Length: 638
Image 1 (cartoon, rainbow, N blue to C red):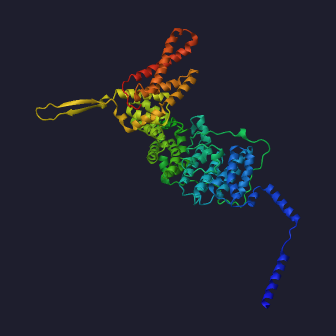
Image 2: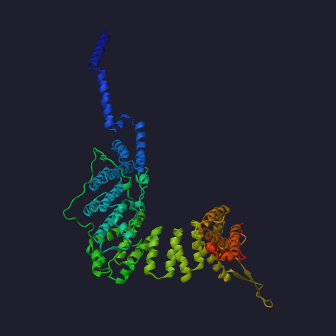
Image 3: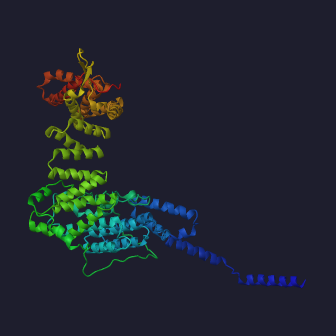
């Protein structure tokens, strides 16, 4: 009984102590706390995120904010976007995901550039890049390297060559980034750009467009990796939402379109855009040197190779200067002293060496280095080495660019029609839509005796992949009729009958196959069936007739030429009584009759234009009639 009383007294003491320590909050304190919270919400919008539940509402807001920011940037509402960006920055301060960082810092750079257009923001944007690089974790090496190169391109764009060289040196000396395959590519492109800026007067661009593209090459620096980066476009990327960035080929010779945003800049007072970044530590600060060291310390053997490997040949230099601008927009100097000066420069040697190292990298990286390396080798007169590099790349990848470069170089340096035709065929097999290459093969068939059978196959690939222009259909029809006229010996077969015993005379029979052998292949049969719906269906003809009526009012015969040449091809493939052929032939026949009725008014000056149109229609009628006279057809598919 005594123990129970002691316990009761102890509980009473605890209750009394709790009552003494409990704080009584007055209504005035509650109102004051609510007022301070309201003021804080107005002053710092991101404070609202801390009041929300992390599991539901806060996460939903964080998912919506990037979409809202991208929409604001797309609409060019820079002031509203700066407010949304401020909230997003505070709400995702500890988020190290690369795509989110790219959205935030690219948006910050764009907002700063548009809201303060008259201010020189080069150094401030460079500091934003420093902060961005510091926010990327070491596990995201590829993203960190890409942002670092974007900073270098920004510095080059604004004429800060020394700072760009320091940044490239820091990239090379970084333990985490020095062994990445794309590091050599970025350093090589940086040296290329520094070399060009140093000798821009000696390297005269071939035209004004090339000069503009060269001077603005660094603007597309971040787009260099469009063809060599394995990184997928993120949903948070500003590029996919508000800017159309050209895909660069990592070449000085890319033609870019630089949009002028001055008409879309906001007027009025400048809004402060700086976003406070708390607890942000930049992992690596740029190193400064009194004398910048060489980016690539080449050995004496490599230096001798670059210096004395190829003697100056004025004929080769002149040919290089006349090359297609898309391949080589720069014109090397014809003076031997100037040429030796630019080729023996340290930047040139560094660029060549680093791009050579890049060619040993994976395909998606080495492909981006091909074009600039070929340009440097051509300027240095190293034609054989450039061709060797291109040939190796053609064997490594199935991409259109190395094959185009190979064809352009063979046009200038290797006068072999068979090899050149093989280059053109490889281009069409990869890109059947290439009309220019197909026209070159057509010219070769007329001048150099290019095989008609091979040309028909190349035209068929083009017809499969596109809707050809009238001239292609015309050449297709002409090739078909020439091919039929010159392959009669291939369509004959001799069969021997009887035995060779004495007293029996051996006999034989001759069989004639009206269809050439190449058209009996299964692939051609499938083509013919598919073309019935793709090019010669009643729906296609009806659409073409409507366009023809609209063009007829303006006196344009382009659509009439198209359907006439298509009908000539269809007559060879499906026979003269094919539906498409008969309808087009009937239309042309009516045009011929109208011309005959108008001949009596030939002296009338008002009908001169109509008579000229009628004569052209008469030529098309004769063309189709000549092809309809063929009694044979290849496929019976109706």
